[in-house]
Length: 124
Image (cartoon, rainbow, N blue to C red; front, side):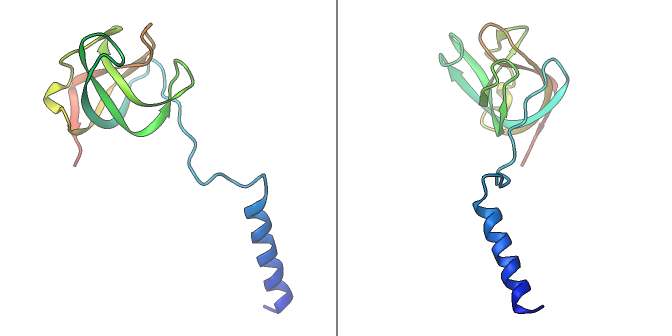
């Protein structure tokens, strides 16, 4: 390769990096599907008062996701069944990272994940 080709390649690379059309370096945030069976991974945590009254459990997602309820990015989702927070849902897995199957719903309190307690796998 001669010097003109090298300079052309370098100039092209620099213009791509400074371009407004440059591809973002982070992956787009995916929207969670509503009312479909899905698998999510995250850490089970105990909540109190932030998302609902009383004590309940949440899952801190491994990766942020877009809520189908509000189009906002969420990192923490309330666990519940039928729109009601579950104070003991997945409590045996407290502070553990798990993969769990369930469905996302949008009750009045915001986004909620209804897990299938029999389909939970610890992730190490």
